[in-house]
Image 1 (spheres, rainbow, N blue to C red):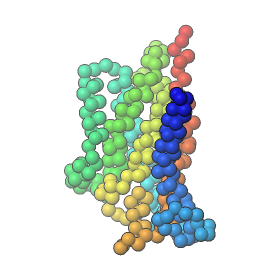
Image 2 (cartoon, rainbow, N blue to C red):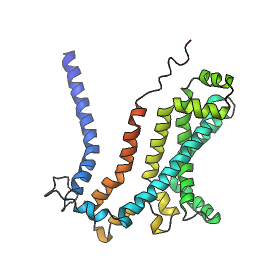
Image 3 (tube, helix red, strand yellow):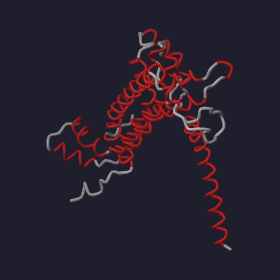
Amino acid sequence: MARRLRTSRRLAADAGLLLVASAFALPLAWVVLSSLDAHADLRVKAPDGVTLDNFDAVLKPDITFTPLLNSLILCGGGTLLTVVCAALAAYPLSRFRSRLNRPFLLTILFATSLPITAIMVPVYALFVRVDLIDTMRGTVLFFAASQLPFAIWLMKNFMDGVPKELEEAAWTDGAGTLQSLVRIVLPLMGPGVAVVTVFSFVMMWGNFFVPFMLLLTPDQMPASVSINEFFGNRGMVVYGQLAAFSVVYSTPVIVLYVSVARRLGGGFALGGAVKG
């Protein structure tokens, strides 16, 4: 009786997991199948005839290549700035004890809960005053600032896992604080840096509201904003081209994730580093 009950519970759990998985799989299936369908609509169905016409229609400089390049510049620059600043901020929080550490962490944690729409009006006014509106560098700075609080939390947690004894050995050999951070701590917390990098890049890559508000020139718009051009007036949407653009738009994120997947699963492997 107990065995039968465990089996029924396991089957119910598996059915629930399959249901959740299908909720994620169906939209992905629609994107892939519709991108190859000349008569795509909102239904998930096999293409009437496999065609690459949708990709031929969107793979043009003004539609795809220029917006993707803008996205790479914005998100790449914002991610690099976020990772560097997060590492520099997390290091003293992880290595030095102070009464201000906890209030500072709680403050930046509160900053992550603020909705982006609540701060865009003062940010827009500030950017107009300092002449950063409609500039790539201004958008990069805001991207980095918006992701920095959570990135500091992640970076600190990973940095706490690196034994301080390794740094003390480097200090004995004459290394400075910045040298120990760059040559000892960051290489050993490679998976943590990879997590922060992927998280920051993905959050910036899919952000529509920030570049839509801060950038005015059409030639500077990233792909997250230009995808709105596929939604025409009166509900007219070319679904096949929209799906093809979505496939191309998702490729950089997939490539980034695959490129760091091994490091994410590699662990820290610091167990024997402090023995002896």
